[in-house]
Length: 157
Image (cartoon, rainbow, N blue to C red; front, side, top):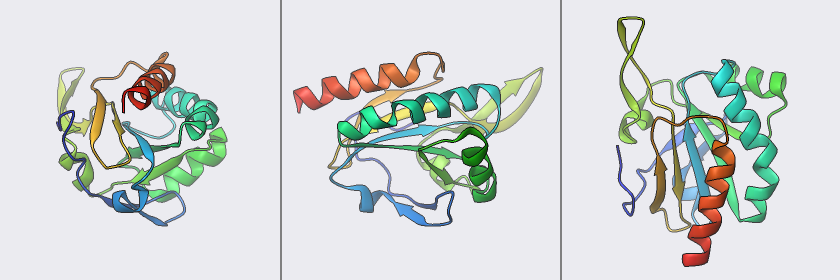
C-alpha cells in the first residue's frame, strides 16, 4: 500500500464512457480516489450512492471523486444508470493500477482464498501527493468522514 506524503502512482484508465482519465490530467484538483470490490453489490452501492450524494460538497472544495474497480466500463455504465450516480468510475480490468496502489490483495471468504480489492480511499492533493488514506473501509458514514478530512487538509495547506 502506498503511504501518506508520497506521490500518487500515475495511472491512465477508461471511465464509464470509455474516455481515458489520467492522473496527470487531474493536477490542480483535490482527488478523492476510492477503490471498491464490485458494482451493484450492497456495500459498494451504498458507498457509491453516498459519494454521489456528497459530490456537490466535494465539488465546492475543488475535489473530484473517482471510484475504481476491476469491473468493465459497460458494468460501470449499467451501475451508474441503475443507481443514478454522479461520480466517475474507472475500469481497471488488468488490475495494474489496483496493484500499483496496493489494494489488490489476497482475501478470504468462507474459507476460500482469492485475489480481490481491499476497500480503500485516498485523498490526493493538487500536486499529486497522497495526504490521507483509509484501508479496509467501513462504508457507513465514510463519505462524510472523507469530506471532513478534506476540509481539515485544505485548512492546513
